Length: 267
Image 1: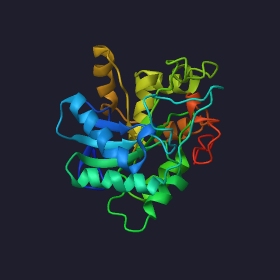
Image 2 (image 1 turned 30 degrees about the vertical axis):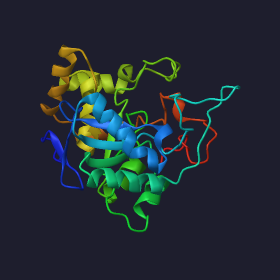
Image 3 (image 1 turned 120 degrees about the vertical axis):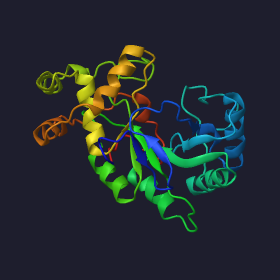
């Protein structure tokens, strides 16, 4: 990826914006619809709701399958998640058919570790590789090994929670340190006369990571675009790399008790 460019070419020939999605239309396949026969109906329902003929990107939200039904997050009487048993390779084949049908331009995954990616990549008869893997990624969880794995297979790593997160109290661990108050980030920001947020975003862009920096604040959206106006030095990048603590802000990614959902592992 060219850090000066504002889009990245995917392994299927399409492009994705470097920062956020703007008019780019992605859609996620939720965990209760991973059975192959549910994949296309789920996408068609989303297209109807969005009033679109196709989406730019359709991704599997996570490698864990939950019990199909009307509940968004199915749980038993004790409050534990109710899992379903699905072969992700079969789910992927259903996504490939959605691409062939013109319902989506590209297909990818989210929250997959390298073993789960390998399962798809090594699938007999694979027609399309995942174009991306969307994961939590920021200076406190830089996902360096996973990033290198993805690069080696021409898969774009997409970072969510790129600025850390203190929102969504139901899912986010409020006890973790606030990323944008980190003294190293603040010092680098002061040196470049930028904000800590812009430094955190620029760090990802220079690593070849696509960044989801969602905001409804016009001032912040405009500010985020300034990420292309400066460049971090190799020393800056090394210092930010040193901040990695394997901290995850999103608690729903840990301790689910499902063998196919090991989010406690960085790689």
